[in-house]
Image (cartoon, rainbow, N blue to C red; front, side):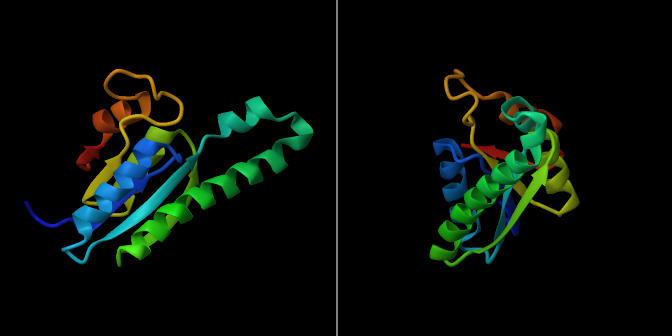
Length: 142
C-alpha cells in the first residue's frame, strides 16, 4: 500500500470521529503526510434552533463550535508531530466531505462510522454510508 500524503478527517466531536482522527494520524505518521480536520456546518440545524432574529448569532455559535472541534483534531496531530490544516465549511455533510476531499487532492477520507446523530446504528451511520457511496476518494471508516 502506498503511503497516504493527505487524509481528510471529518469531525463532529463524536467518539467515532476522534478514533478516525487517531487512525488518520497513524496512517500518515511514517510517510510525512498531513491531515485536514474538516467540520461541516449543517445550516438546517440553525433554522431549527433559532428564531429568525437569532439566526446570525446561532450560525456564529455553530461555526465556533466547529472551529473548536477541528482545533481539537489539530492538537492531536501536532502532539503526534503531524501537519494538520483545519477547515469549516457549510452545507450537507456528506456532499461537502466528498467535495472537499476531491477538490483538495486527498488520498483518503478517515471517517467515524457513527456520528453524534446516529450512534445507535447497527453498522454504519447515514453520513458515513453516503460518503462511502458517493466518494471517488477511498474512505476508511472507523
